[in-house]
Image: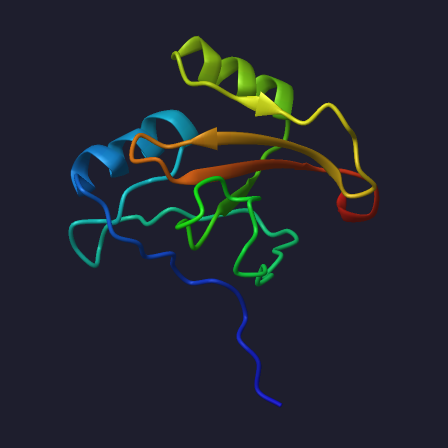
Length: 125
């Protein structure tokens, strides 16, 4: 069977596309889409990617109408949380350490949920 090799993009609607792209760049280090084909696009490090549909009535993403949640791998959840908090961004860290690592939650300026994941144990590498 032919298989996909990874996620090539994540596309979503935004009220202010330029401001939101800048927020992701300045706070999480996600380079914006290049303005031409010669530009450099954001490249992620190789690692585990979970693709998991959730039940329609989940409250895990926050708002009931929220259809998705983005999960970013981080090297150090504590350092990322300190960096974001230093910029006035609220970060909620789950106090539990799971077999696959540690997790935190952030919300972008348009209310979209973001999960931060520091892999550990079975997913450390």
